[in-house]
Image (cartoon, rainbow, N blue to C red; front, side, top):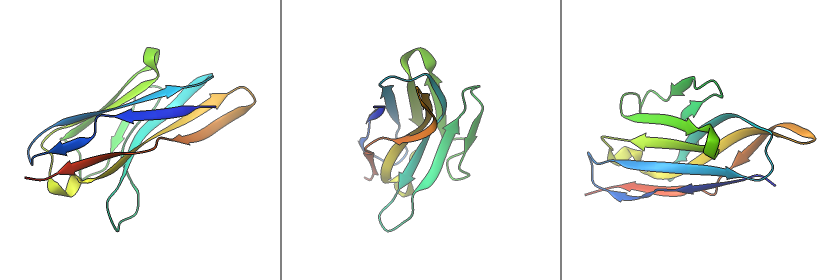
Length: 120
């Protein structure tokens, strides 16, 4: 069974920074793309940032220039560095990974979510 465990959420003031981490565990042949999504109260889940196995990245327009996604393949971990945080960034952030394992390919796996609150 493949699991994603997130960490790094919390309360931060506007203009502050946070770094989220997400580590994948289990018997994994290959991790394809990894990404971060978020869901604010009363809103649908949306893509924040994604990184492919070739480290190509894409971002939501609302976070471009403020957030940076990266990955450490040796640790099966993806990071989201969030700078210049705004109150509208408040949401539960979910890690996502597309993985291959024995007998199955392109499995979508989700973390349990970590809450980010931006408030003074």
